[in-house]
Image (cartoon, rainbow, N blue to C red):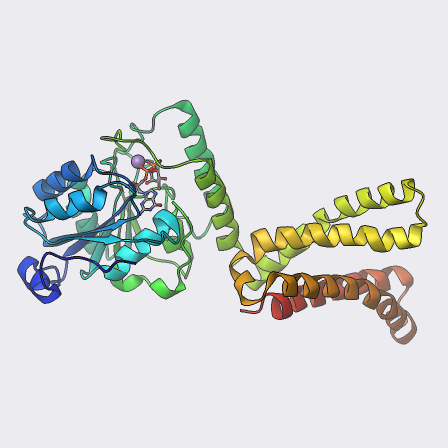
Length: 381
Ligand code: GDD
Ligand code: MN
């Protein structure tokens, strides 16, 4: 990562603009190829903010065009400090960029906004004022409260995707998002002191979800805004970002051990499908059913392994080599089968259980053991 470039020494920067004063704001703008938007953005921020509260602007840039150069030139004529943090490695995408910006912020308040003028800079002072007045830690600019609208969301397709994404997030986190009508918004103010950046795992566009849900509840307020048309250039969102959003939701939802165990179980259930398909193919090809069972079980194991790697423990893979993980996972999955029969015998003979409850209990026991074993031995943090 290239270090931030400020036109001046950091100390002078703070004193000059008063951004270290309470109530001041650091505007964090993630940019990816926005060279034709940044001048207008800085012009409108200049019009709207410094007269009302001390400010600085931090661009966190992953561009491949001349956006950072354009910003550095413009910075010289701005009445407040403007910096560009250009990242050579865009970890976490848009969300990762915002977290870097929050880390670099020096004011009490951080306002996060897009660089394409879909978010009106004239609202920056209002977001902060609202947070101060309500004692809120997070103020979301919402398209879905009275006075707001998504005017600039062009096309039925994008409206439908946006609506479905909102429903999905609200459905998965009814409590965590109870005060947030527009969890997809990329325009919000947050108190710097309310963010624990070390705990965050941003993944793509939905940084607001990450901040609102990752650790505990923030005191939230909302204020309406009208989502504008893009000023220049094109949106960078894509199908890939959509998939990333789904992955991010799973990651947030499975942050607790109980939720992880439920997902682990659901994935295990889907494993019956490849297992049975393989069994019928193998016996159909004339194999004796016993070796066929053992082989078919491996189809289920592979299926479960891929889903668990891709969804549940995505961020815990790096601690072991993939071959090591595969071997351990397969061992645990098969130990499960081997352990089940002696367990059933134990429950029947020692505890006097009937065969059916003994089998059910053995299934639950081996499941919990396998989950705990997978967490501790394959994906230990
Ligand atoms: N640093 C960085 N890295 N910035 C990025 C990246 C990235 O990988 N991808 C996008 N950006 C920047 C863009 O340059 C822009 O300033 C801002 O993030 C938003 O990107 P757009 O491509 O304009 O997003 P959008 O208009 O499709 O979506 C916006 O509106 C949605 C509401 O409909 C975002 O704010 C979404 O979060 C929001 O849900
Ligand atoms: Mn946009």
